[in-house]
Image (cartoon, rainbow over all chains, first blue to last red; front, side):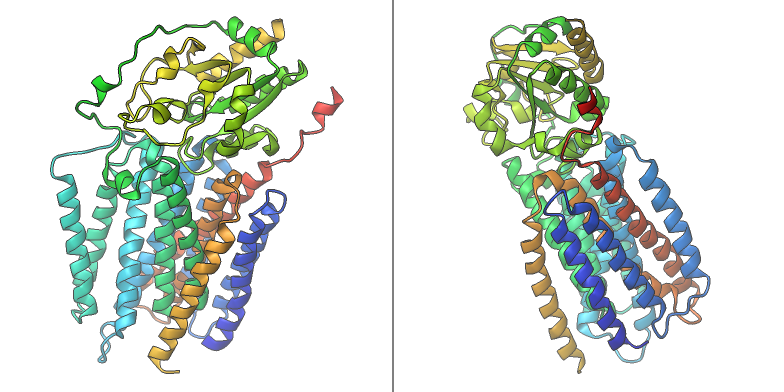
Length: 462
Length: 104
């Protein structure tokens, strides 16, 4: 079929994708929405197979088969705690595919006697550049989350200048291509430079800033797909890419706002590195009160209302099932249990929600920050499991603190606070937390899962 | 349509789609932000259309052939992995306690 017919049929795909996103506005319809989206994708694939000029040959089926096996096995086998790196990985391969398509399109069109149309050249450069950055950046994000490389920011002297120069060189190569330097080596150099830039740009960003980075890379891949659409004159690619780009951009903004930092600060601030002076400013007086699991069990069992505040420590220890068990035991004793979810708790947007949903916690018990904060004064015990910076009252009280102004969960307003933590080490931001020295706070040291299970046993024994 | 007329139409589509995207996505609750990310991940797997056009070219040269093949592998992994992972996540979001709790 010709381009007009195929573009008409691709409209079905576009409608399916928009509906898929619409259905995501409620957890009751979201799963059907995902199926609608998948159906739209099948339509797009079928229409493309039927297009004039597409020879099925061996490459399409063989490539599809290999990709399907990897995608399906990876998606089925991955543990819920490893979800952030999985999302990063799928994001990266999409960007990589967009970059490869631009490379092939350039190779096909450039040697023609007539020059490339300016807009097609811009689209090729844009999808190649953004796709490569997204591919390499996502792989670095994946490696950081999988702990193949250090999660802490990696910095060295001249990093920002070097990155800027590299980006400048890559953009200059792009401008040269658009201006008519249609040599293949220029595009190859551009793609290589963009790959290196993708690596260098994510390296200095620390683990706790990953929610922002993953959202941003998501937006990049969307833009790369949209640019590919301009290259191939395919409306379905333009619309889908724009939808993904909009989603990634919105999430990026939300995540930066939840940390009270600008996107530039997240990307170039190398937060979490040693800052001269910051250490002395934040030394607090007081003693740490250490609790036993039995103490905690008694506090929790005789409470009316308990709010659980999960953080990355819960994900690392895979304690979500134990947490759910504890909540069950407490509810049997008539205690009301709710969960307070900070927008940037964990390593990707909504990370804690997915983990707790996996442990069968009903989503109606998961409360957003704005919803739960007014309830802390009526809360008997706030149980903080592996969270630190998102409950640090310094963000509210101390204008000198590096995290001052970041919206936090007001656990310090609860009648009692129990903090489960591996040690007194500072959180990702490297800032002391006065909450731990508050007279109403007790600490239960140890691995989050072991601690929660010990408390569960003690609650049962009561 | 001339080349530049097509471009103007495409740009119009792009701008409208961005506005549509912002409207639709701002209605997604924070509860579902992870499925939103992985769902949009699956949607950008639509580059598989581009990969198919490249991989399905008639008598491609060496570079086009292999680039198309690798792009096919990546894009297919993106599509299948994206939708399957999203389905796994959304399956877990439940409203009520599972029935076994009422039995006790």
